[in-house]
Image (cartoon, rainbow, N blue to C red):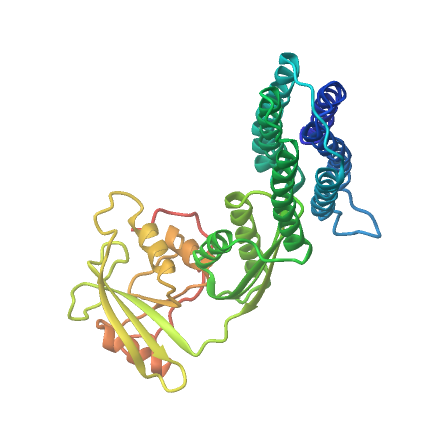
Length: 415
């Protein structure tokens, strides 16, 4: 209801402006004032249309299950067409009406000044309300009032010139036509873009892409698209997820949707198409006690981490990095911080010499679909060799380690 009241305000403002211009036009006989009066009357009709659009745009029915959001854009296009009609009528008057001398008094000039100030002030507040609500109808209406400020200023100049016996009525009328036509074209272009399902702007799509890509369980973002419908936005994307369980995949898409809604205003619907990742490579991470490749007994206290990419087809190592632990100096919850960092690095498997059962990192890795595998090997090379053989005990034999979330114990703070 808050946004609809601006439709009523617009109708009231147009009535006031029409009355002022009618009185001045009848008293002065000025062609320029008559042109502005026609402009007001057309805007009055479009203001009524804006109000109808604001009331009906959010309604849904069986015939229109996705709502009537685009009705506001239809109103914008109709407003543009009405502006073109106004321009045509003014041109007709300016070119084919017999020359006549206008009468100009001081009170008429004062009336035109008032008719300039009213739309100037009103358009400022209406435009702000329209942008806050992302309403194309209100924004279009406010821009049309900005045109009134210019055209009424032209009327004032024409009347003032007439007072000094310098007739500018016809010229002023044609200047008004140019201004009106420019506004009409801009509104028509904006409205048609939405009606033809043009994409969201580049900045908004980039922001959405960054939100989705930052989600740890997203292995690949295939595409993102979006469109406007009235004051609302619709977003659609396709992603590949690292998690395979249906419940976790659903939780991931819900989390992405919530983040998009929080960051991007006026989003009506977010549709995420998710499919599990087909793995051709595994990215391993292992805590190291030194840069030479000795495995560390601790996750959070390890000074280094090895990041190794292994091709699944033949077990060949395609890439390896030794990276300093960025959270080693944390005073609290360093294990959880390290786990979050590894998830952000898109790690698939973490090789561990310690058991993390019941500790915080277990839940971080589990929620992101990262596997934890215990190994008895003392070096990175030995652990990778054991992985290739499928034996995760003591450097190639024994215990096969643990995966997933382990025991559902009390969530700890890690190392």
